[in-house]
Amino acid sequence: MSTADAATLQAAMTPLDTEALRLQLVDIGDTLQARLHELSARPSVDACDRLLISLSGARMAVWHYREALQREGGSG
Image (cartoon, rainbow, N blue to C red; front, top):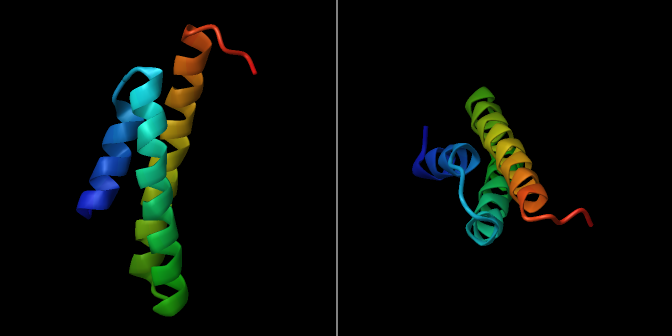
């Protein structure tokens, strides 16, 4: 697992305040973009696996961000 994947998974698992979670979304997006470019440029099973790990971490990060928004009373 790369450092970017580890950071993505850590972001997804760490209960942080809404602002901290929001700031991590840009890094997560950059990681996803890099993984997609890597997969497109050099298709391989390993590149698919790295992207799937990043997507899983991104999904969890968005879920935690959603929960933080709800805790702060934001519904919109």
